[in-house]
Length: 462
Ligand SMILES: Cc1cc2nc3c(=O)[nH]c(=O)nc-3n(C[C@H](O)[C@H](O)[C@H](O)COP(=O)(O)OP(=O)(O)OC[C@H]3O[C@@H](n4cnc5c(N)ncnc54)[C@H](O)[C@@H]3O)c2cc1C
Image (cartoon, rainbow, N blue to C red):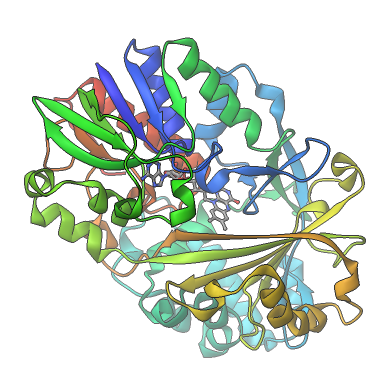
């Protein structure tokens, strides 16, 4: 088969590699001028790569670890000691271990105990998300941990991530966050281990690209799909002109370039709205209103991520959840408190993380204007902070960063197979009940390649 894969994120590259290994000819079309999608990296100096958006893996992320093994790069993954905090009541509170919870004074001793017991109960509740799918996180937390825990910790966190949709978020989403990933180290459980690749995500992305190209495939960067149409038994893919990424995400804004290319099958790994906008009217009719309606019904929040190079350490923690809604961001992730700064030539990096509804005013600001808005919040966490500490800064926006998982989400997940034979869609809205992540993008890419190569085989929903 000649297959077009739309998107050179982890899912698209994994699928293309698997298809190439099975003897198919793959062309990967990518809108951006680099590999990796949400896991893409940038050169922060001297050829050292760092993710545009903070990334780590959990020790429970098996699919991606198996891929590293298969690619002959088992030593690439390194387990590192992490440290986590909550910013609430005017300061950072360590929040990695059970002992930290007992010392967490923003909550009354009774609420601390209730919260600890509820998390423990969740973690021992087994692998079945079923009991948590029909209730909101808010209702479950208030019932199991009490009102104070919701108002002080979980409510502000959920509002930070999901804005005015926070009250609708399913407990299934929080269940996966609290049960599937967190593993504490050693019998004393003093630290959490997180995993980070020695050479950033870039080496994995490059290895995947090499395998696709070694088998006659092409990875076409800065060459987005602009239009998709049925042609004969297959499809025509019309590419957009170089530099189209400057026109945003909607492929209808791209200038078409060159003649369409013909494929037997297409695997799209782009967000739902991009996929729908690619289809010409006849193909949209074939895909059908039911399927397109499912795509439109899932909302995303955008990620807004400011990456700062600092001349010194900002705080003692790798990860700080900001549970104080007066601060205009939701997280501080200090990369060089997880990975030693020596790896970056002594430079230090801090991500200031935000999730926002599309159209939010902060998404319109440039890095300097955003820094002005953030400065007081950064000083609230570290009163000594001065803008003069900043040596370099980068700003990244990802419109389809976080699908909003509301109650009953399972029933709304769009299937891998669209209504049009030979046209598949695999993206982050299909990751469930786990929260999206590169581990699951690997799983999704493998699943999609398998569905394309054995079209009659039923495909599991997640
Ligand atoms: C702020 C943030 C933090 C994260 N932190 C972590 C973490 O710590 N650990 C972790 O494992 N995961 C993390 N993730 C999630 C992880 O990065 C994603 O789940 C994963 O990379 C998704 O891969 P994907 O290939 O499914 O989608 P994407 O990476 O979104 O890939 C889709 C690709 O399609 C391309 N595209 C769009 N339109 C077109 C078009 N018209 N034609 C061609 N190509 C097009 C895009 O440019 C993109 O490259 C984070 C994500 C964000 C935003």
